[in-house]
Image (tube, rainbow, N blue to C red; front, top):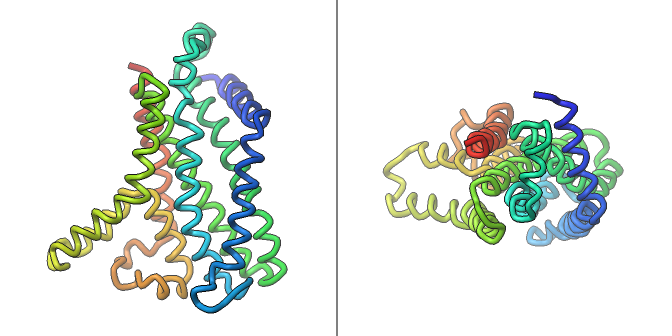
Length: 271
């Protein structure tokens, strides 16, 4: 495997996203929404403005869970199938590069664009938090930004896998949207329905561990358990077992969500 060829492909993919102003548009969306939510997110508790780092992160968690998976899926769904439909995939494969190098180059370029837009969008809020809470408050926010990037990379891996499996762009886009609905809107409802229907008498901690099957829930647990006040606010202290209250474990699960779909995409793209 030639890393220079992977980086060349990744740089081209990243430049293409910069040229069509995709990064600027997404960063602008994150900046506007994060500023609005930061100042108004505590309105339900009768507070407006930068009152607490816990309330700020709690409010932004919901924004990230809805927006970043959708943006990552829309960014990566045509990474391979788009090249196939344009007829450029055969031309790329005719070059002295392997399919794995092509897949990794595409993914790393898209990941760089997604990471830049995410961090740029949240940077203005970071400056405001530093002015208000100094380094202790900013430390938690930087952890939140890092976990947001990991969440985006996990859904980008899923999008690239969908792009390899699908034979048409329309089918790939449909799969991407269906994936967003399932993980962001439906998955938790299914778990809640199962928990209510059994009256909480079956399963024990199984329902808590089932949350690990959804990267959006892993992101929520990762941020909730880093802040004690937020745990109390969400009421998760009683339903999440202590074994999951470890940031390194949740970080490992999120890395698994990044690596496994990419490995499946490589296997499917190779066959």
